[in-house]
Length: 90
Image (cartoon, rainbow, N blue to C red):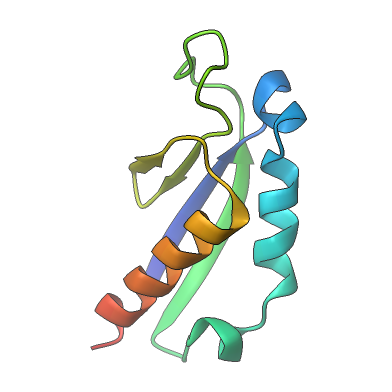
């Protein structure tokens, strides 16, 4: 099974900038809305701060399959997840 790993920074500044809202948005969607089937799954996890930010200027940070998304919001993260789901289920 193919898996998409979504890591959301749970550091103080990213949390204040909405990283937990991103996690909630992902969790609220079901497999059908994301276009998932039995061949692909999504693992979402909160991670400790990796020190990526420069004084919090571009937070919150989300890593999707290792790719960094700066200044992330629910829309940009969802778009990337859907793009990867489509690639992995072809």
